[in-house]
Length: 138
Image (cartoon, rainbow, N blue to C red; front, top):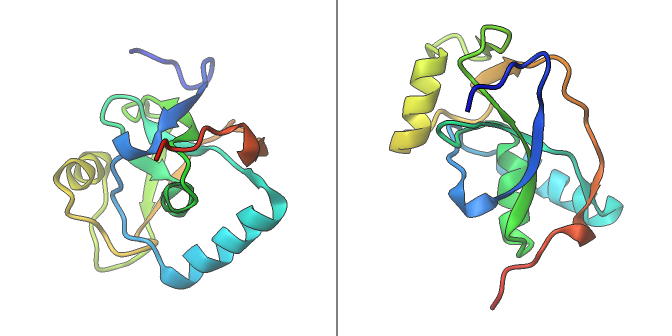
């Protein structure tokens, strides 16, 4: 799929189980965000590479949705190859670039929490009510 970042944003519900993380999560941040989502009853969309299904932003939200028993999560599907999407390191001792991030997602060799920072302009932080999400069947 060839999407132009400045013109097209694909906001869709996507199966959380199909997503590939490239970073680990932080337990304290997970607990804080879980409480916030339970209290406010909404979630903001995550950002995912459309080609590899690697999570670019929203690792904690994906983990929370799974824990809460939901099957799908709202996600912006973006073409990570677009030059308009930037990635920066948050940790000095780790090399980051798009190719390495996709590789870590596909191979499961995760960075520590908060190693990368993605800059993606023009995405709205919609507040999606969690009650519209479908629960997993038991």
